[in-house]
Length: 299
Image 1: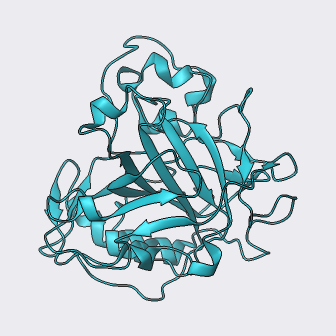
Image 2: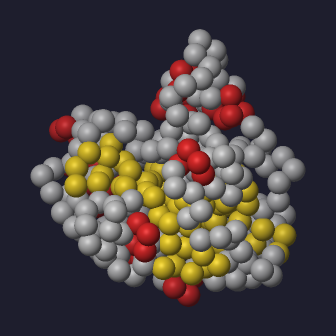
């Protein structure tokens, strides 16, 4: 998950195979940390034939997702992805998730995407070994903790919602005023919007998978309660965020599950099959140009 990255560690060393490629092209060894080689790393492959059903994983309560909050949100380009900060003073306390087996209530911090290229898909998690075109992460912090540093000291400090995306051009909106940011820059959105517009329809939010893992970018802290939703979102919103043309394949490959278990919610599929019912497609060169083109003059 971008935007939470550390900058220290392992200078002058070669990263282990789990960090390469495509990560090796996105992160320098000096940016990586020893914690990126832990036993509870993310993302993972979700093998739906090996899941354990958990009847306690019911519906998640999305508070404030159906409202466009007052204030402003900032869009930043860190050279690895584009990150939308949701932690405005007037809104963040009201955009929360709870229930669904989560160990507490969590408030929204930021969201970002991982994508591929014209020749490969780019989701971080995979379903039955299938990679989808794109993945959205919405990062939340446990309301018990005031800072990210404090949350990283607790195994349930963060909760991340992962959503797979099919690629389309429906329902696109222009929210960035004054042009998109260049690498290392940030701009304010022209307006906030309802986060629910990014999500699958409500009836599909009951099907998800849960496991304990980590951030997917350095420092790879193993403090994340992951919720990965089964239903791919078909109406892509991605051109809103003006993805940088210089960034492709900004995903980390699946990491070993080791002794962990992945749990299926009551409504999730717990058997194998195509994750997108034969609708998976790569980002076509034309579509990629449409999505990334607005960013290219500034990089």
